[in-house]
Image (cartoon, rainbow, N blue to C red; front, side):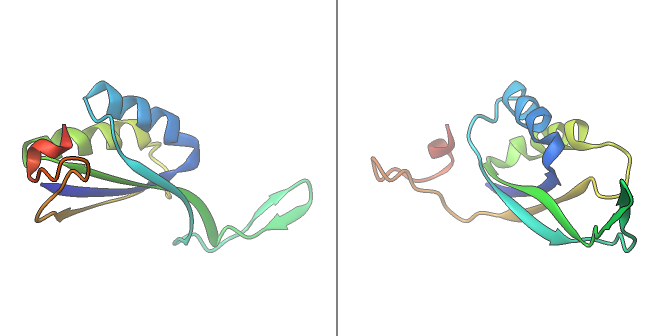
Amino acid sequence: MKKIEAIIRKSKYREVKEALHEVGVNFFSYWDVTGVGNEKEGHVYRGISYSTTDIQRRYLSIVVNDDFEETTIKAIIKAAATGEVGDGKIFVSDVNECYRIRTGEKGGNTLK
């Protein structure tokens, strides 16, 4: 099993969620997070300068079976990409085991 963690623009969350549902990822967790990015300049809006060093993003945590890793990543990239700096990052790590609390069942079938 793989744990896919994605940090995306908050404005792209709805599109990413729909893309994940379309490929069969129906369960994941998410959080609103603030991070520090590479952008060093502020933006000016109506004459007021705003710092862009603290960036609002959405953090997604998804666990999938190994054979579904590439499909999930492609769906996120396709839906989240704008082509601009700040589109986000995806991290993939191994998950050793998964348990369904209700039944005590373990293994990849618990993700269905």
